[in-house]
Length: 399
Image (tube, rainbow, N blue to C red; front, side, top):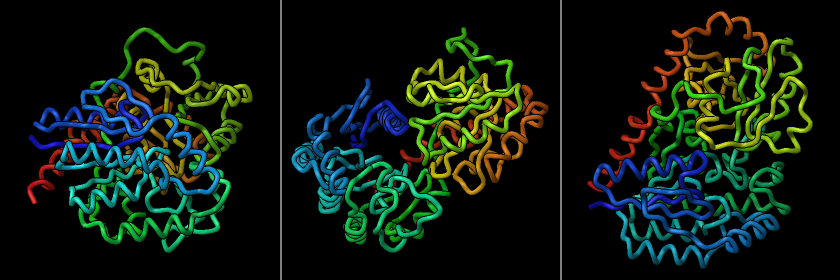
């Protein structure tokens, strides 16, 4: 029986944690033994779980990273214990997801996988591996192409007080120059296009879009579980794990100033302090992983809009479409891969969103809803997308 080990910051929570769990379940169905090693948080899993370090390792790593901007270069002891466990497990394939998150010594891990010649997949959910600091990049910076330094985004995750982005970029560049055992899997063609110009450009790359569990994300028909929202108003849904200036909170606030009086925005993922300062036409909700709440929010909204120009796929957009809701995406972002003319709208600016309201009202029909769901079933169905990983696993071990 072949063995798969996935490594991620979390298990069965958050977007990457749910993806790792689903991949583990599918691998088990196809005759693989599945382990997931994690550093932060885990919920119930069908895979065997391996905890990397403890909360004190994470806290120390976070503090040191904050002080001197050396994220991914601490947690040596916890990492060495993991490598001992990997020696015992002897995996056929190791799949890495988010290996940032203050829990693992990244060079030690990568060097071990290279020296043991273990077939390794890196699913790229963000940009961290190709930059000297940032998990996400914006269009105003291209330093990541040739070498970082003098970073102007140190306040963004993983935040730091001292700039070591130049040396961080160099150690990543050095280690990835000699990693023949690695296959990169960007989660969108948009992200793959960035990889072609990065320090990762010499590695084999194979795009696999994120998958949506269409048995879970479907039009909601149950009893109301979300209170205090007037669904008779035209509702624009905006959802994020955490709202910051980098992922568009100011854009949503500015957009709301141009909405007609019979329209509203519902923002999910806000802190209590952020909710307290919202204008009257924005309803703020804290982060939720309650699936019934999410499905009701997705289904009853008239449209979903993601203002984040740095997101590498747009999982919440696809989840909403699976629930029958059309999407508005920004031109030049990964979101363009999710929609077509029948299921969404591509805009150049947040100020174009209010101009679409009348058109969306006219076009929102049962037929339109069915087309949205059908597009996800056809192109982003987890059963289809994640089978591509099983095929990749099998191809790697047959070499």
